[in-house]
Amino acid sequence: MPVFRTLPSDEARALLDLTVELADRELRPRVAADEKAAHFPREVFSVLGGAGLLGLPYPEEYGGGAQPYEVYLQVVEELAGAWLAVGLGVSVHTLSAFPVAAFGTDQQRQEFLPGMVGGDQLGAYCLSETSSGSDAAALLTSAVRDGDDYRVRGTKAWVTHGGVADYYNVFLRTGGPGAGGISTLLVDAGTPGMTPQAAEHKMGMSSSPTAQIVFDDAVVPVTRLIGAEGQGFRIALAALDGGRLGIAACAVGVAQAALDYAVAYARQRKQFGRSILDFQGLSFLLADLATQVAAARALYLDAARRRDAGQPYGPHAAMAKLFATDMVMRVTTDAVQVLGGAGYVEDHPTERWMREAKVLQIVEGTNQVQRLVIARSLSGPRPAASSVRT
Image (cartoon, rainbow, N blue to C red; front, side, top):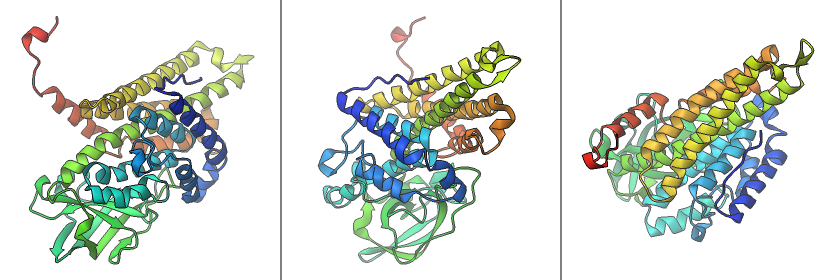
């Protein structure tokens, strides 16, 4: 079913048209083969960078696209619908540029942002560790000041683009225990003492490398400190609010692709002398799926527009991530069911979408963590009695 998009400008419409064209030409023809071969499509990211799609929400003065988040996220949705590893990769790259853009000095922005948002470089975001996932404030990787450098020791885990990124935003401990002792360093790939490990073997997104990064007395200049010492946890949380919207957009993209494929299959598949789409049980199932996809899209766009307007949007980002990723798991599972046995074999992409959907409920904060964020927002300041309508 065609997606009707409300966009804020003709420039945004042209940008979405370009994204659809690139997805059809550069992504869909090779996704199945590259996923099967676990081949990371670095050249695809170079094409997207050349088209200006790797820095969309960042300022033009640094080479970015100066686009509102509602436009950027719809680009991510289109890319993810064609190839989740690419759509999610663009979201992670955008996340990786955020610390410098939002918390860096003017000198750091001038030095680092043009390469990040101009399409020449690909970034990674290193927050999780094997012993601190949801409890990110318990991370153990440390950075000890040594003159004009830091010496970094420890291991970061679950790093998207681990081993293929050009730079890494690393959250580590420069002070005491807890959130107040965490800082952020921008570390170049190839830094001596920093060693990416072999990529994890995952149930989905095989073309996107996820790896641990080991630091063994890696020397990082003090000039690579982003923000002040002890500000790292605040930076991480601020970045994740936007990153969760990227994951929500990815979920909607995959769900829309699965829905479209299931509807097309149901139209042409004949049983008992008629299209299976004509059977009420199946048509009502697909109607429910279409409603869920549209609702998830509306939810992430509402949160994005709040962000663009400078309004608080953290709980709304958590809602969008929670709803959209639970939704994509249901939609892809039901899409497999619509195809029956055909949906379970690699001849059709439905089995791949179902496997890929699962990770979206986990990354950028599990959906249990999203519920915690939302619940805490409900226990905040109460409105005045006069403003409560009954």
